[in-house]
Image (cartoon, rainbow, N blue to C red; front, side, top):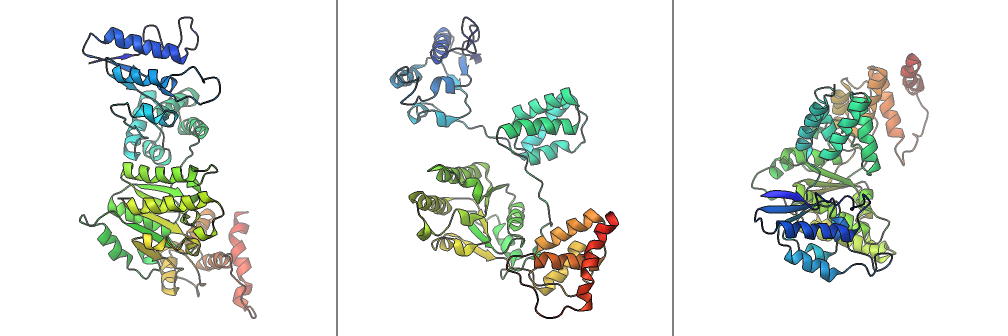
Length: 431
């Protein structure tokens, strides 16, 4: 079968006078192409940017009175040759138009593996001088389509042929489209031994990863910031061999009525289509207590979340620092509920040894989390500091900076009096 672009010879990108064609002219070119090809028996027509022809008009403005749904729908039903319509936004089309399509196929942004292959191809085509691992890094950090990748590589060839030129071009286009770079997951590599939970996480992980175990489960992870809730969700996904679709509660909130419900539904649908574990951080923003709602849409937002949670067929994980703010109907909707607490004394000492590569030189403060050790480890790497006494002082500073922390009562001993000097030593040395 041969594929023809509608109006290839006359053009649907311009009219007979080289000007911008109207909707009527594009529709006329399509009908003419179908008529000319109807007798061939082995031809199809491609109409690109189909929104021009199929977009539903508003009931007001310039388009009023210039559009007939009956004419459009009748034409769709009697086209004599197969027509392939391509578009960027189905929401612009009337549902009555869409239901007359024989098939609707969504072509999403490729997954990481496919994006890696695309980047390798476009980089080789443009002959850019880039590190061997750049394709993997770009694929991990940018959800770029093949067209965007090709355009960025072409721009890099013209402006430097190196990695900074490529990233500069990519940031410009993706930023203009409202997409931004996904930062590599930083901080502490997840260590299941450093999680303070009543549940044996290793056993739970093993059971969830069994082939016979249903994947229609949900998990609520609560606890203070830095205890490893999001990292554990990614850890589970790796053992389940599932990609992760991660959203923040704020990502799904909309200023428009009905917008939040639409975003919630889209997140669950995307997870289903990608076969991904859906992770929603700061979930209390979407599942707050409905008794405190002021507007009706606040209630419908929670209802939308609860409905999807009950009907989702893949793993769903949400994290929250404020479980007490959630609606009273939320807990029973979760298959599993885990609380991650601050590190107890043995786990804090273990974290010091594993993450800071040293023995604790003294008693560790209460309330530390793996996230606190991640901060201190990054700080130590920045200043080249390896003295355990300095690392301990920094950990105490992290503990004292937590909300609700009160100063100790009583006199401070000589050991504490030396701590400010120890804490400042790396800065003075760097200066």
